Image (tube, rainbow, N blue to C red):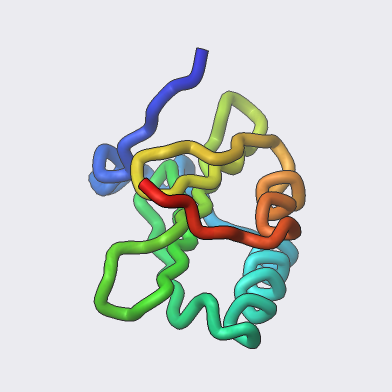
Length: 113
């Protein structure tokens, strides 16, 4: 069963040992994926937030809108877990960032709602 995570719950300050950050290699992977979509004109801006036990890389299509996607890293016991969300929907959850970013390897298409 999937667990819904509200990132707003993690805005409280956590002890320094509980803080989660993207390491250099993970940040490079995020920026590689982001820059490819910027070149095609799909994405315009990003934000990096650290909420103690959760680090979030948010991706925006337009600077003044809510993020189109958010990649979160959180501690799950001793392991790290990566979660890709779009709005309130969880698109992918994995232990490796590359597995989560593989969602963007497929061309995105507009879904009529």
